[in-house]
Length: 427
Ligand SMILES: *Cc1c(COP(=O)(O)O)cnc(C)c1O
Figure 1 (cartoon, rainbow, N blue to C red):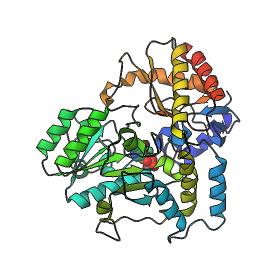
Figure 2: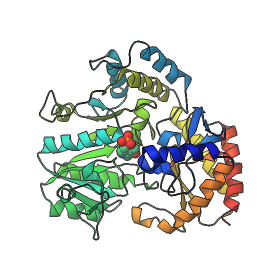
Figure 3: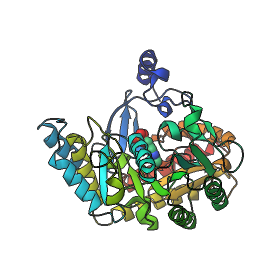
C-alpha cells in the first residue's frame, strides 16, 4: 500500500498541530505508522490521499450511522446552507429536531442543543449540581465522558476512590469532587453512597460503555443504579453520546427501558456535524438559563445547518426495521469472522451495531481492569494487516467498530475475507 501522500501531509501537520492532529487517537500512536489522511467518503467506503480505498468501520467514531455523504443528509444541508449558515437567533429547524427527538422519546421532556458531546456532559453535570445543590459526582472506571475537567479522572487504588487526574492541568480540588468506582460492582456504589451520604449530585455512566472496549453491563446493574440514585435523591445521568440513536432510537434507555434523570447526546444526533444535547424532565430543565439559575450558552448552539443534518439523519433512523437491519448485518459480520478465526485469543464482543475486538482467554470482559494492555500488540498487527486488505478500523484496540446503514453484504463478505487473511498473521 502506498501512503506517501499521507506521510507528507502528516509531516506538515506536525508543524501545525500538537502531534500533527486535532484529536489524539487520530495520530495512530497506539497502532504505529502514519495516520491516513482521508480525501473523501461515500456510503461505507473512504478513500485516502493516496487513492487507497477502504471499507470504513470507524464511521467518524460513530456519528455516521447512514454512512458517508448520505444523499438525504447532503440535500438537507445544501438547502439550509443556501439560506445562510448561522444567525444566533432561533430558527424553526431547532423546533423540528427537538420535536423529532422528544415525540419519540418517553425518557426526557425537554432538551438543550450544544455543539459537542463534551459540552453536553459538562452542562449536564453543572445542571445536576445546580438542581441538587450538591457538589460530588460519581463516575465509573472505563467510561469516557469527553474532556471535561472533573471527568478526566481515573481510579486510584481501592474500591471507592477520589482517584487521580488523567490529564495534566486538572486541579486536585476538581478531582476531589469526583468519586470513581469500578463498573458492574454494586458494593462499590453502595459504599460510595454510605461514605458520601447526601453529597452526591449525580451518578454518570455510559449505559453501554463503548470508549474503552465494549464493557457490557447487565440490566440488573443499571436497574440497581436507578434505584440507589432515587433513594439518595441523586440524579442518574446516562451519557448516551455514543449509544444514543445507536442502540435504538431512544438509545440504551430505550434498549433497557430504564429512565435516567438526564441523558446526554452527541455523535449521531448531528448527522456528521458538531451537535450535542442534554435532556431531562421539565422540572430539571427549568433550572437552565434563562428559565433558571444554571448558566449555559453557545454562539453556534442549534446551528441551522447542523440541525438540518440531524433532522435528515434521525428521520431515516425512524424508518421501519432500521435498527433490526443494522443488528442483522452486525451479527452476520461477527458470526462470519468467528467462523474463519484461527487465533485462539481473538474474541468479538457486540451489541446492536457496535462491535469490539478483544484478545483474551476470558469468556467476557465487563470491567476496565479485565482488559490486558499487553494484548494491544495483537491489535496493532491486525490493524495494519486489515488496512492492507482494504478494511479501516479506528486506530486503537480500545475503540469499537460501527456498522452503518450503508454497509452492504458484499462489504461484509469482503471484510470477513480480509479478517481471514489478516488473522493468519497472528497465528
Ligand atoms: C464521544 C463521547 C463523548 C465526547 O463527545 P465529543 O463530541 O467528542 O466531545 C462523551 N461521552 C461519550 C459517551 C462519548 O462517546
